[in-house]
Amino acid sequence: MKPRSKPEPISAFDGRVLRGERSREAIVAALMELVGSGVLQPTVQQVAERAGVGVRSVFRHFSEMETLYRAMDARLEAEARPLLDGAARTGTLAERVAALTRQRASFFERIAAYKRSGNLVRWRSPFLQDRHLNMQRLLRVDVRRWFPELDDAPAPVLEALDLVTSFEAWERLRFDRQLGAKAAMAVVETAVLALLRELPGKRAGRKPARGA
Image (cartoon, rainbow, N blue to C red; front, side, top):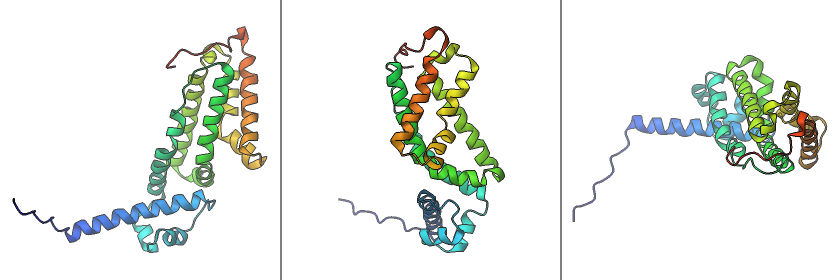
């Protein structure tokens, strides 16, 4: 048998790269943890302490805030986006409304702290402005996928559904009105059902085709 070859030693340069990557990941994870725990505008010192790195390391890896926002967003999207993609959009109207409401509640609860944090600085961040608009478009398209009854609906009905199923509506119910998640879901479900059942032609009871 041939003797096992020894692994190639890591060069000093490779070692620095690995340490740099670990530090970067630790900084992003620290910021995610701080914001997720309710610290919506953590200081550099707080981030450095949580990550176990020096303050200089935070500035070195993220000298521009846009870079940090992008890193946070990528991690959050990887965790939260599957919550929007997992439900079957089939069933009666009432079943679909209930499923959509549960899905939105799970998604909004997961991203709430990060949206609040981002809203505080969105006015000065082109990246966060773009992500905000992208999420609005995504959720609006998703409503139409859940409810093909909207194909011929008046524009005000679609706008109203977009509004009551939005993060902003959820935030008002949960944060401003201080409703529990179940109570907030009941409000959203009631509003969506009321809007769909008032569609002209009473088309709102049909089931969508499989795979819609």
